[in-house]
Length: 235
Image (cartoon, rainbow, N blue to C red; front, top):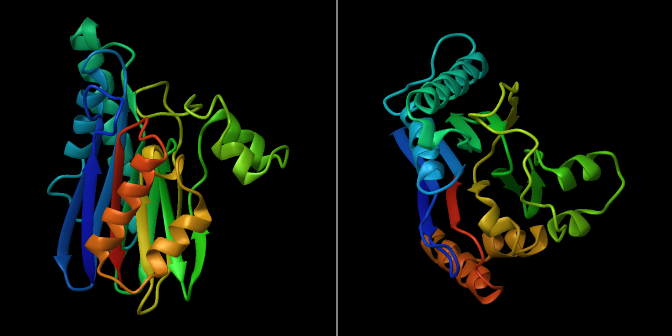
């Protein structure tokens, strides 16, 4: 397995509230986590960092990896809520949180918010996660198209986040084969380039680092209005 990651502040933000974690445990096993913080001042950064701390040093194991990931999501929620109660200046902070554990040819995931997981298999791109946003809700109901959802004026309004009232994460599993790609991205990436563009970037025959560089460049050319973070794993 090959893994590369990148983050960029973007062109309009004063700081970068995105955080990511990559733990390559061996050639067939890896933990990937991405968080996009929200809140005034530095609160978003704090929320994202607390969420990732819940996964640092963590090694999913046992008979139910999916349940183990959900437990860590709950731990992240507890950490953020406790810090918010202790420091009034941090009240109202929260974060998206998307975690993926790859073991052999199986991928287990848990997710809250609008960070995403994509899976490219034989040139076909599948979005694994759903956005917990107003346009994400409308898209799920079939009331708007994916492109309308991407350009929706309320695209950054979350309906679920870690640190808000407790919401049960989405979770699941999917299979992998040699040559597949998995992408974790913050909304600063997938709000500015389409799924078709993402599929094209992942499919081109260049290194993973070059794929990431091209994605970042495309987002900056499209305005770079938010922090941009991406993690790519090639099986």
